[in-house]
Amino acid sequence: MSIPHGLLALLRHGPMYGYQLRAEFEHATGSTWPLNIGQVYSTLTRLERDGLIEPQATDDEGRQRYALTAAGVSTLGEWFAKPVTHADRPRDELAIKLALASTTPGLDVQAIVQTQRVATMRRLQDLTRLKQEPGDDAGLAWSLVLDHLRFSAEAELRWLDHCEGALLKAAASGRTRPPVVEDDAALESTEERAR
Amino acid sequence: MNALDLLHVDRIHGHGNAAVHALRGLTIHVAAGELVAVMGPSGSGKSTLLNLAGGLDRATAGSVKVDGVELGDLSPKELARLRRHKVGYVFQDLNLIPSLTAAENVSLPLELDGVRRRPARASAEAALAEVGLAELADRLPADMSGGQQQRVAIARAVVGERSLILADEPTGALDSETGEQVMRLLRDRCAAGVATLLVTHDAAHAAWADRIVFLRDGAAVDDTGARPAAESLLTGA
Ligand SMILES: Nc1ncnc2c1ncn2[C@@H]1O[C@H](COP(=O)(O)OP(=O)(O)O)[C@@H](O)[C@H]1O
Ligand SMILES: [Mg+2]
Image 1 (cartoon, protein in one colour):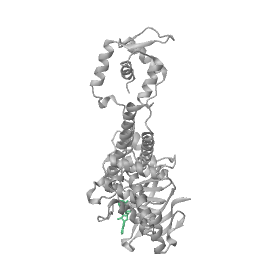
Image 2 (cartoon, chains in turn yellow, brown; image 1 turned 60 degrees about the horizontal axis):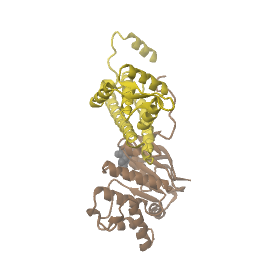
Image 3 (cartoon, rainbow over the protein chains, first blue to last red; image 1 turned 30 degrees about the vertical axis):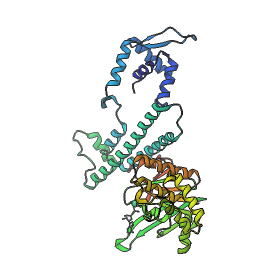
Image 4 (tube, rainbow over the protein chains, first blue to last red; image 1 turned 135 degrees about the vertical axis):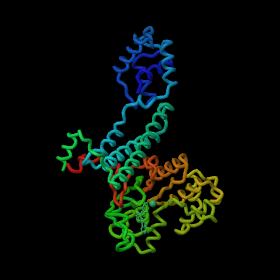
């Protein structure tokens, strides 16, 4: 999640101070990615250093407000124009976990899949409950974030079904484990102990 | 009291070498007002479970109770009466009677149960209004869309004072918007105190439930209502 770009986008509405930015950010994303105020201030410091925002005169209560610079506006425009590529996203721990589980001896991978399925299904239940709640003023931005989370959970469940099917097929044809690599003495000795 | 209790239920189809163990020691409770979804691969026993819960099929062993009444103790006549009176079904093939209008299809179970024509008609109209079909009460099924027919089938299942609704893939043939409408409707019925057991393969619809039970080979392997087991997943450990 790009916090700097998020703050630039909020400043497009006009100058704001730190606490305001944090509140607006959480409002738009339904507190899905809570920010602490320290993160907001350190990000503002970096954005100012890079010439993307500039401090304004303090308001009546002495709060420092920031505004976008021309460079900030164009950086923001580029961010919106560019698709998010796969490399920008954090590695998916679940995919890595199952991939490794399928090659690790002594694991009941189907049980791992089922445990994950229950957890993801619970998450989808929670998200569905949120969706059913009568719309408050969080409005469209939050509703779109929520839909994204629901669809991701659904996709994850489909993928888990797929993994289970592939594992069963592999088990049936005796391909549950890859050949042990020769120089992987550590793994082999773990196997020995498992037996 | 629960609307539905299955206790250590077995259902074996056939005999000897041809015997198929469709359910094995299955225990499920559904409280009044609860919406429970059942998920599981094809052949895991979902439809068998619904048939037993609705008294359309009998358990080989174990106990099935609807509103506290043991179905195994009932005569065929008593069972038929309980089915009409307490249980509403929605099947994948809707079983609407083509020569009857929507309202007649919905009021039929009430009339079979001895309710007089006028009050039965009034209840049917109220149920149709609940599924958003008040205007179409006098249409024949053939003159309705698939989604509308599905909603008539649901109105028929919820009409009267049913305490248990059994639905086998009721959203299977529907587009996603109509599917959501159906789920909202089932949720509303549960809020009114009806218990619902819903079979679906669609996670988005199952997610409307209070609890999801996962069936595999005739047994419940998991339940989203239960807390996750903390034990190690290492089989040899
Ligand atoms: N009337 C029957 N006679 C013999 N076997 C049956 C009968 N009904 C179901 N089965 C078997 O029982 C198992 C469970 O079936 P079912 O309850 O229909 O599963 P699901 O609805 O989950 O696909 C399957 O193996 C199925 O072939
Ligand atoms: Mg079935």
